[in-house]
Image 1: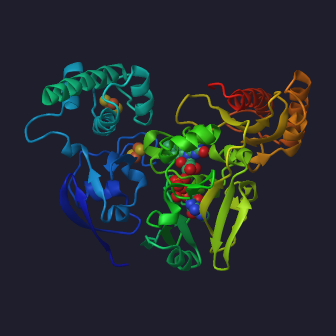
Image 2: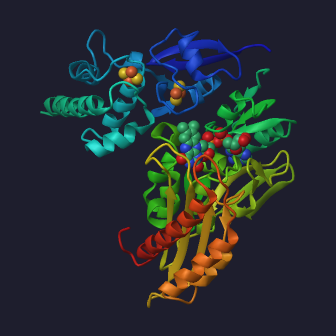
Length: 164
Length: 289
Ligand SMILES: Cc1cc2nc3c(=O)[nH]c(=O)nc-3n(C[C@H](O)[C@H](O)[C@H](O)COP(=O)(O)OP(=O)(O)OC[C@H]3O[C@@H](n4cnc5c(N)ncnc54)[C@H](O)[C@@H]3O)c2cc1C
Ligand code: FES
Ligand code: FES
């Protein structure tokens, strides 16, 4: 079977790759595209370690076919930092120690950014429900939630400064 | 496993042509199909992605009712204020599926055609009186949602047929619906029992129509017509609820599995049905519920 040639956009830049019809987007990101930030925890939609944005909505890249990315926009954890500057979420994760092994972190960061873009001032309960599809075996979630709520505060302040 | 050719046609005619190939399967969100294919439970020879077909995507008003594209992700339901106001039970059922990531992909068409007895949106759709528009080589037909599932993992769709739209009727005046499920965890779990209820109350609080459907207590999602009939003509007094529960108890055939025993499912079916009717009735009276 000849491979499929897919052209897409990854983190704002045009990208192309070859894949088999049944390859996952996760495999394409980590393989031909060389973006290994996105992790595979379960391969079955349960853990969220593979979370990416596809045309602006967060999905498990293990449950998306690579071929589905044709003409779509994909955003991964590699797109979070701007140049050398960490995203406020990344900064707060570091400060709170919201990771131990770090395997869940890329997925949590992408999912948390999606939350804060939709709702920059989530309640703790909203944040916990939003992140229910991101499993972490190490932290017990509490530091993760603190980091996300603090990052929301940072982003609201930033925004306030820009408006002012 | 040989790779299955993937296609994403942008019109229904082409999709039907591709789906007619032996062993081809329709792909909506892939949250069941890709997992089952990787586990070797399914070996599709081709996957026909519906998500680039306009009719399969999005929510459209149809008179006072709604047309929901069969491959529309569940999150779109919650974002449609008119749908939330008209059929909150259907929306709450779709909003229980998986995580945000899963709901950004999972569709009502996939939930229905995957034909799991525990599918959350199906009892809610059945209670609401939803229909499925089935397209196939022979044209289109509109059937009640409860006519689609045939047993675990099996549907009544003929080879080459697919569901292109789901349709919800207008919310009747004095109508209300609700869906409740029991899971051991609050998120990311499969229903032990699910109950959808939709009913209509007249100005005096008397029930003039009712539909009760249950999930995870029979080989398919189950419309229990006698349960609805037990409520019609009553003001939902204790005796009417007891008659509804007796009808449910007679209709269901739950099994023991790793999630719950049959006996527990039977008990919970009654508890959830009572609560779902109360919630639907509160909504019918215009109360926040
Ligand atoms: C982590 C996780 C959690 C989940 N939690 C829940 C839950 O809480 N409740 C629940 O009910 N489900 C749950 N599911 C199962 C799944 O997400 C749902 O059943 C979902 O609605 C399936 O829709 P889909 O669009 O992804 O279907 P797909 O996987 O694309 O398709 C499912 C099946 O239906 C067929 N099909 C799809 N669309 C059509 C169509 N329009 N016409 C004909 N055939 C079609 C496909 O060929 C396939 O056999 C969960 C899944 C995961 C991975
Ligand atoms: S690897 Fe995709 S959800 Fe776990
Ligand atoms: S830090 Fe190890 S899984 Fe979350």
